[in-house]
Image (cartoon, rainbow, N blue to C red):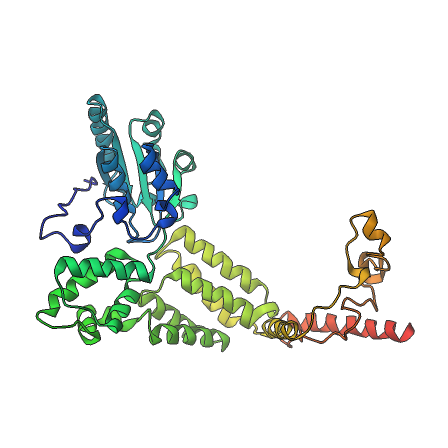
Length: 435
């Protein structure tokens, strides 16, 4: 059966996360982009207009909580289905219960957790009942609904994006948890490490904290050693908020830069094994493609972007293989930091230099007035010149000599770029001597 039972939040044996589940939208921590004054879900609550929706966001951000609060606010029957365990049979049962509730004059909310796990036919089974208004459909997903939810269902539901909880949100949640459990205080370093471990996931934070409090016994303060003892290897392996997190990233970057595919894969897998969000690893690889490879192999940037998009489509673990492919490609690609160096040099120059006037010949002249002021006069259109190059033309302000920022390296495609640049500079020098 894929229908989820409703836990008793007030039962002492219920998990801490369940006991702390908000009972009104004013108790919800975070998600102010949806629940703040005048925001979409706040407006839905206040107007009494419940609509079908997809709640998209990372784990532990309140998707189930919001669905339940909506059902409570509208005195609607709440039916929860797990897409991991359920199927068409559960959908049929939900329809029967919704029909019975409708006959009694009551609304129904059908909540589907991890809706992306349902296949096309299972998702299609909701369509006629959403259209008829038999029930309000609320799907929850951690995956991009553009890729994982049928377009027909997506067109009938509003997508609301939930965000990971920030550190201040998690501190507030910890304070509520401590008050409920009457627990000893957390030292500031222990609290920050616990928040870093939670990584924006309220459920993960509360589960870890509950275990921690059970281990604490009669201590006066919960400190870092006790936290490490409670979380064990999962905290020590990959301290997301601490030094090891940044050291591992640094090792991956240096292994890629050093063209060692095996070491690069090792550090990449270490990051995943420690709990890093693969999307973060993808973002770092995109940076490496620009910083350390650049124009020596422009395909590297496109390949890393494709790998990141593939991960968004497939998720974990399937999408991780595309990221591993990108890691190996980056490690084996020819290396150049010429663009990175040139960009930094240009930024530094502009920061020190004054604001120079744009030469009249380089200005655009969309109006007669501007043309009368000689905007664009004397500009040489490169496409009309031999070889598509206006030899001797200057594109710098008139009162400065142009510095050299970009110097291609003799690796990969930049070998040919360097040859082309040298030839263009030679033509410019010849034109300058002839003038």
